[in-house]
Length: 467
Image (tube, rainbow, N blue to C red):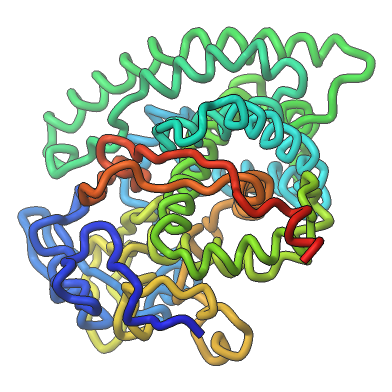
């Protein structure tokens, strides 16, 4: 086993402390969230604080998180300010709605994201990743690329082709323009809770988003009309959303609802996957022993060929590597804020009606109360024998409960296929010794990008096989 004490600390950590508390890690470099995370939240299962807007409760213990998100989810709906922001951004998409409308959309979309449905998208994902590898092969040895931008470009291509089949190439510029123009989407703050001010801010957002998404809306309308007129429309996500029916009522989506779910999938799925892959490249560069184990498995299973969906169960170490990357650097470090509809008790702490419940993967995934040396990158945490007895919500990069991310299997498969395709052939090194800073903007990205040198692997799969 590699020497864990030799592992470098991760972004934001203090280099003089090989193992440190989360309070130390965040001091002076907090994530930019609507809520300032008190240091004490990392040292206790539940922390109730007071603010100008009332009670704010930070929950880090997985069993208590389960109470809020699963067992009594009906008593803890999403905060209204969050729903208003996401409705402005996504319309009536799954993330921006609640109540019976949300249940109807979730039921209707369920068949689109079954394991069997998700498996059919693997060839397009692997093919796009292989074409992207050709772009890196054409670069001069040691060329510096911003991996954050590169992964955004790759995952944009993948989601466009998965969503729109061959039409994806034509729609990609409109999608890219909407994504780029959306800019800083995480501008929620306490002003959004103030009467009068909140309404003005929301009106400005809605106007802005309507303008930003107008070209993409035109592309979606064009492709929807073409599929309605086609005798044999392509079997892609757009067609499946159009054909989807509520299992209880038999009703399908309206054209506007299809549009809203398409935009939701793009924004919620594309950037999170790109962010996850960005941090995976960072971790591969900073964890050479673990990177070597990963590539040894890829060489043995794939031997240089493009992976398929059938290969994924044969890559257990790659899956553990991804799971640990999602734990320690979750693409979406804050799931959402919930509000207590009725008074409750949680871990012996009285929860008054109206209290804001703050559940954060950033907090739960890194809690020293749950994880041994939580700042360490250790994929073998997820070995079956080491996972025994661990609460299933100890790491929840995709959320939990009824509102768990519907596309989590799609995202995980995409990450694994990109990783397996590219890591076989390339090794990336950090292009600078400067500390990598964290920027929270709905997703958790490296501030200023992540410049890395692209190098072809010196030990090819053929050479490994010959040894």
